[in-house]
Amino acid sequence: MIKKLLTSFGLSLWAVLALAQGQEAMTFSRTMRDPIKAAMAGSDLISTDNVAFAWEGNAASLPFSPNTMDAALSYASWAPKSLSSNNLAFGAGAAFAERFGVSAGFALDRYSALGDTYSDFSPENMVASLAAGVKISDMLSAGVSCMYLKQRLLSDVAYNAFSLSANLLWRISPSFDAAAAVANLGSKISDKAGNSFSQPASVRAGVQYRISSLKANLGGDWFFSGNYSAAVGAEYGIADIFFLRAGYRYSSAGAVVPSHLALGAGLQFKGIHLDFTYLTAGEALANTIVAGLGFRF
Image 1 (cartoon, rainbow, N blue to C red):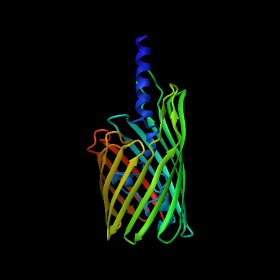
Image 2: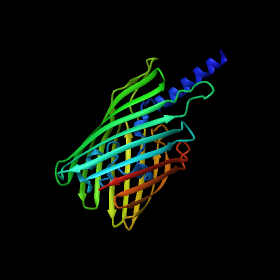
Image 3: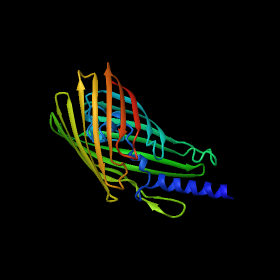
Image 4: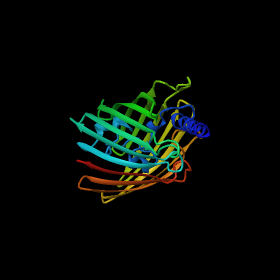
């Protein structure tokens, strides 16, 4: 009896933590799976030369991409000090006819079996997404992305949802871009107890300034839940081969992505790029590692 009670309590606690944070559900939809964005603490809302993960970022960046195709695979050991998970993600983005772009992606998060003594079930999250962008003018583009989300807490307990994001990108000058979005709009999710949770929807805005080999970003989210988050980050390229990146995010207490410091580096040669990011400073995300391998042409 004690064993059953402990198991039930542990599963219930895990479900509350994983399903909702600050009355928000499916919070894994805001996980940074792109190691390049993660290295700048998610401050890069533009990413016109990095569109493999545009399906989770800014679909409006696709038509401005200088590359015909960008594809990448990423792995993350996410939040090892809290609900640790191993995350795999794939993304691809393509631009064509100088006015259109499309992106697609898939991600799977797998948690260690909850309470190895009592259960051998491994909870998991899954994301499948499609995105498209179009140039409205030489200076303005719009994009939309749709995510299908699935969360399995137990073998017989699963939740499904769809979310929609709409994005704009304004090329103010050759060196200065601005972006705005309404992200993660979707229906509410209800559990078996009748509790209802909203998805982590927000209004997003950001700018990027480029000078020589330096990119500097500033971005922020205002969540419909009342929480907020702001991030600053930069990337410096050396001979267009080696890249250094850093960023810091400050978030309110209940925000989906907690405050943290990000450090990263990348190597690019003949279209192949290898990227590595380490998240630290914030207790919840400390020691998170995100790595990726991609190819663009």
